[in-house]
Length: 152
Image 1 (cartoon, rainbow, N blue to C red):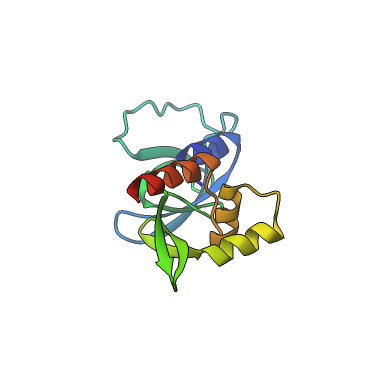
Image 2 (cartoon, one colour):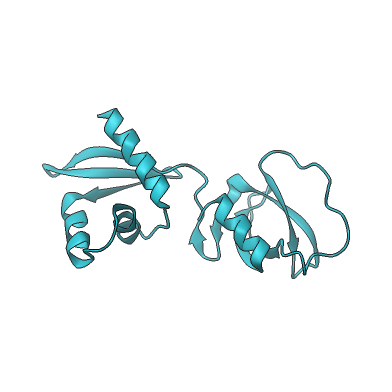
């Protein structure tokens, strides 16, 4: 889940956003940007870069969160940093190091082959998502793969 996908969901209805507040506490907020739900008051006040104003449906008021503090959206991992792939050797087999938000996972060739055999119609980005339990777009995986190729 990324920023653009989240904004689209917010405009469609209620969204559960889990984020870290400025004081370090975690908060789960049910919020929206759906026109029919928003009160008639104006929110045209200029916000600092990286902030998002939303309507908190439970508190019945406008609230702000920082995009770089979002953890999940509707229970799905939120990607605040780009996907990064790097070729690595794992137990003498080629693999891929996947780094998202500072968390690093290793995908081995055997995992990719197993997933591909079980799901022959899946595209590469869908295989990564299946193995990692993530929700990367085709463009994100393609870009990361191009960068991994140029690094080697």
